[in-house]
Length: 360
Image 1 (cartoon, rainbow, N blue to C red):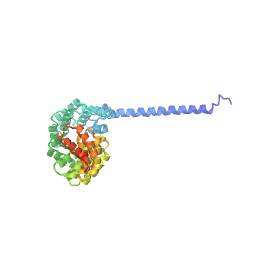
Image 2 (image 1 turned 60 degrees about the horizontal axis):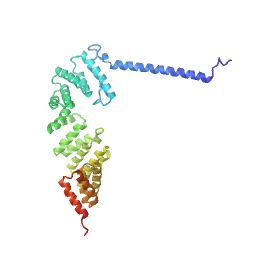
Image 3 (image 1 turned 135 degrees about the vertical axis):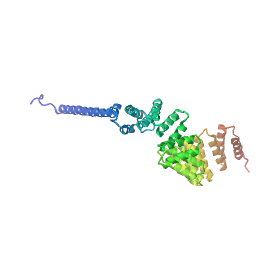
Image 4 (image 1 turned 90 degrees about the horizontal axis):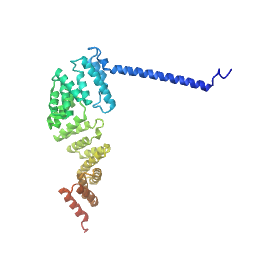
């Protein structure tokens, strides 16, 4: 048999491999084309508005809900998904001019995308259809709020008092009332939202602050503890600080020290940790643990080189311990930062006299 009739084994193998690669490429291309066609059909506005009444509001909301879950459009992918959702919802309401179910989600998504003019038009139509709608009033208040316009507090109040209001409206009015120094109203509506099942770090934190100011440390401790359970909440220094203050007010300073120690371990930002170290030092000094307090003050002051108060606290603590050289280091820093302070000047003289006093 000649060599032309029987190709070499390696040549035959290469041919088969090429054939299988081409087949695989063709299959992948076909699958991709099918997926793209399916997605295009699923998310096409036309698919939602071919015939009035053929698609319900619930159908549209089920389709767009996964696309609008983010609080804000934080990256291009989220923004693209939300934009697609807006197109779907806008296509639907063209076929349902009296819709009051899809419009609130459409307006909220437009606000997230900073399409404020579109959102305003959507909200006005919603309020035209339902003037006392809690959703419409809340959305209008939200628009005023993000634009920095006056009037959001009153709109949030009306939304919270509406017959169909819920946790969202109660929380928004409660937070706005707190910003307007209306503490009792804030407590009333935020408490109402929490009792209804709200789990929100901001609401718990505000209730904690209000309870602390009202001399109710047990309530404050509960609310700050709940706030710290939220994802990422352990990076908020104010929550740890509030919890420690509640424990101190309840007569449990040792627990406050443990709380502040945990905070310094958890906080990742160095400036937050440094500020928390000063609070920890204050707590330690308050229960007579001066050596530990001095160390904490020094770390806190070194981490806040522009804080004259942290340096002054460190200087005072070292003076109490009789460590006058260290005391001078920090009082000099405090004086450099705020030379016009009478208190710092007095402590500087006091420490200098102690350090350079003649030996008996």
